[in-house]
Every structure is written in C-alpha cells, then in structure tokens.
Amino acid sequence: MENAWAAIGIFMIVAIALPAAALVMARLLGPKKPSPIKQDTYECGVETVGESWVQFKAQYYVYALAFVVFDVEVVFLYPWARAYGQLPLFATLEGALFILILAVGLLYAWRKGALEWQ
Amino acid sequence: MVNLGDFFYSLGIWLQGLLVRAGMSESAAHSLFSALVAAVLPLLALMTAIPLIWLERKWIARLQDRMGPNRVGPFGLLQVFADMIKIFTKEDITPRGADRVVFALAPVLAVAGVLGLWAVIPFAANAFGVDLNVGVLYLVAVGTLSTLAIMLAGWSANNKYALLGAFRTVAQMISYEVPLVLSLLVPVLLSGSLGLNGIVSAQREVWFVFSAPLAALLFLLASQAEVSRAPFDLLEAESEIVAGFNIEYSGMKFGFFFVGEFLHSFTMGLLGATLFLGGWTGPGVDSYPALGALYLILKGTSIYFIFVWARATFPRIRIDQMLNFNWKLLTPLGLFLIPTLALVNRALSESSPWLRSAALLGANILLAIAVLLILGLRGRAARMRAASAAHVPAASTR
Image (cartoon, rainbow over all chains, first blue to last red; front, side, top):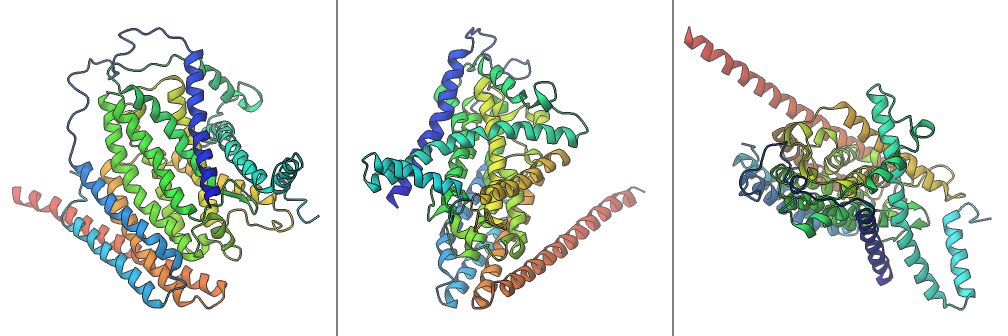
C-alpha cells in the first residue's frame, strides 16, 4: 500500500512538473516587450476605476456553506456504501435514515429561501 | 500463449525481468517499474490533448455545418501543432497589480488536477497506473483541484470580470460537485468496492448504466457542469463577463486552461465509461486483455461526443436556472436515489445479478416517473399562478 501512495506521489510531481516546464519554455521562447498599456487591466477599453478586490455578494457564501454540509456528509457515506453489504439490514436502514435527515435539512434551507437567487 | 495478447502486462514483466537480470532485487525492480509507469503516464495523458483538440474542433464544425480545420496538413491534422508553435512563441503578459505567484500557479494546477485523475483509471485488466483501494475517494479529492485552479485564476488577475468569473465558479462548480459526488457513490454502493478495478469487475454481467440509469444521468449532467462546458459555461461567458476567469491570460498560460478543459472532458468520459459502462470489459478481453484499452477508449470517446454534442446544441443557461437545476432537482434526486438503491440492493443481495439489476432498474424507473410527475405538477401550478397574476391587474384597471 505504501508503494501505491509513493507511485501517486511520483505521478503528481510529474503532473505538476510537465505544465510548469512548458510554461518556463514558453517564457524563454516568447518575446518580452512590456509596456504600461499592455500591462493595464483589460476591461474592454474602459479605464478601471477603484480596487478589483472588493466585497462581494453574500449569496455565493450561502451556496458555499450548503456545499460544505453536503460534501462532508457524502464523504461520511463512502465507508457505509463500501461495507453495508456485509453488515446487518439495520445498518442499511440507518444509512438511509441519515440521508433522509439531510434531505430534511435541504428542505429547510429551501423553505427558508436560502436557495433563491436574488 | 496465456498473456500473449496482454501487451502492457507482458511488457512490464519483460522490463522487470531485464532489471532483475541486471543485478537488481525482485522488489526493487518492481518499485522502479511502478515509478516508471507513474512518470510516463502523465506524459501520455497530456499527449492525448493533441488529437482531442483536433477531434473536437472537427466535430463542432460538422455540427455547425462548417468544415473545421482543413488547411494545415491532411484533414487539418497538423493544425494543433501549428497552434502549439504559435502559442509557445507568444509574449507572456502579467497584468499590473496581479498576484504573480498565484497567477502563474493557476494554469499549472488546472492541468495537473486533470492529469492526476489518470493515475487510477484501469485501462485493461492488468494495465493501470496505481490500483488504489480508495480510488473513488481519490477521484473526488483530485477532481477538486481544477475548480481551485479556476478560482485562483479569477482571483489573482486583479480584474473585475475575472473576479466575477471566480464568483461564478464558487456558485457553479462547487454546487455541481454535490450531485457528482452523490452519483459517484452509486457504483461504490452496487459493487461494494472503492477501487476502480473492483467496480469494473463488478460490471462483468450487467453494466451499471442499466441497473442505475438515473445515477449515470446525474454523472453526465454534473460532469458537464464540472468541466464548465457550453450550457454551463457561465464562468467564461464571453457575452456577459468577456472571458471570465481567463481574461488576463495570454500565451502558454491561456493555452493550458484550454488543454485542461479538453482533457478534463475526455477524462470525465473515461471515468463515466469506467464507472457506468463497464470500463475495459467487452467480448474477448479474457483472451486478449489489451483489447480492454481499446474498449475503454471507444466508450470514453462516445461519452465525450455527448459532451461536445450538448455543447454545440444548447444555449447558455442563466445563473439562477443553473443553481435551481442543481439544488432543487439534481441534489434531492441524488439524495433519494441512494437510499432507494441501497435498500433494493441489500434486500436482493442473495439473488442472481440479473434479477437484482432488473429490480434496481425498476426502482430507477419508478423514481424517474415520480420526479417527472412532481415537475409536471409544479410546472402547471407555476403557469396557473402566472396566468392569474397577469389576468387580475388587467381586470382591475378596467
């Protein structure tokens, strides 16, 4: 098993090194003639006004929160999905109950209007 | 004769034998060989982007009644190489005020996250990078890297359009991660294995697309959104936010976002083929295992074609429609699908695979009918409300 993770490690290092090497090569091959206008922020020809890193719509934050809840839940479900075949029927029912409780949570967020885009 | 057809496997055995004869211990030779595979596979994966770009441009062109690339080389086959030469010699511009490190890191991550998925795909019975026993969890973890890359790209460019693209990434790619992960759970549920090779072996009798068609549909829709392809390309919507997250990118960095996107669609096709279409299984794989790789690539390419077809067919959807579709249809459907399939599968665990698959298919059809009924009723209620709302003020003004 340690062997498999070592192979994954090598794989990921090569996967990061390949595009990085191509970027370095492109930097060496390409011309470099910077000018203030070229490096300006592009907003369809209009000059930029103010900061770019501004406060943003809080709605996105609500979706990110809902995502965290459901994704963590599903990660909990993976071991259950792997093993419920060898466990008594009670384990299957309990897993189903767990998912239904989460469905009620989704229904609550829905009724509260958290899923409406304004 | 036994392993004559199994080209990859015999090549591996031969290489390892060579190393042992050169004076290496058996285990060291094995480790060195798997390290070699792990190093060569990402390169191969990156190379597949070259035919893919040509194939997709041709397909899109034919779907839009055009010829597509046909000037450089026979059938335009060398077009991609011409583009590569051009893009390599372009100036690399970093806009003023950008976060330089993150700006350069984002395209690298966009490609690396996709290449990472190839580590666990089984190409034939004995040919895979790594047969991880938690393969599906690994897919979920590494698949998120490309979402992160797009968020970083939008954030680092110091551009308001790019930032809007990054916001939409949060709303879209993160939301669609939920049905994707739920649909990935179904093959695990039905096969009782978290490793991809175990999932493929469990589909020898019946493919999971027949026993769980709803899960396959969920996977198809969610992965289309996850690679941000046309009906779901809100993060780079040209007509709304110019080019979204990649507006400030140029040259090779810009190219890598596209290589990442093409490769991601195809990789999702391969994963769909592995999880729902039986992967490398097919007639004759037992005597000639190398055929498995051909089957997998054929199945993966057909799913990839569906992605391209959808891209050429549907107009871009609005952001509230996109979010409603995910949170009010796909996610509840996934949540109800999993306990239903688990209960049916557990109740019939003793019976033959054919009977079990038929029962699972029946459960899927019932669930699909229920969903269509609810959608129909809600749609009618909404139309009635709209009709009466339009009627009443008109009556009162009179």
